[in-house]
Image (tube, rainbow, N blue to C red):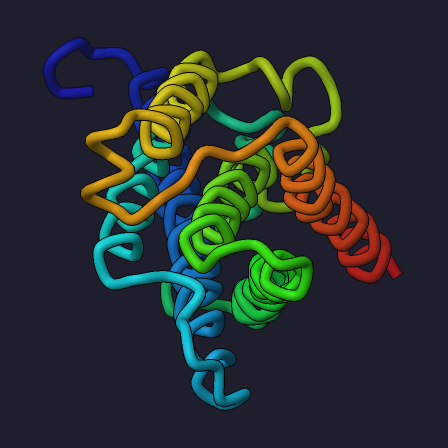
Length: 230
């Protein structure tokens, strides 16, 4: 206002501030469940007395590097109706009850899917390298689908704007796919990370299981939104 003598600057500044705050919350809502899922997968293997862990330390490092895809959420455009919201309480914690619930909910989905496919591979006679490759790829594909969920905290993403409205998310997903294919099939990467080439049938199962987080979180959003309206 002091520099351009235009009170519309106040409105634009508020809109920008709300967008930045929203995007910080979305990044947190993406990082914590995915990290929680990794931790619970390892904890589950310990509690169940597994001889081999689903992920090796170097594979965990790889997955943590891959979660840098959350940076794409920093470029999220303002959500619809952002300026019609009432001012937020300055004392409101970032980790609200909704956030804590979502973190737990998504972490459990990731654990069940990743650990389940790891055990399924071992029980069907797969080698430990193959089973671990399935576990890592399942976890990363889970994160790819959940990245779309994280674009909106409560609004649905199963529409054109939700799926294609942020080109940086699409770019991040494309890079993740390329990296995971290299992680799985390039001989040097196989030697470094202890991975094995997967067949198409296994990829189909991974996609089917990992996509569950997209549908389940969207259903959870509907339930939460309906609960808030009552």
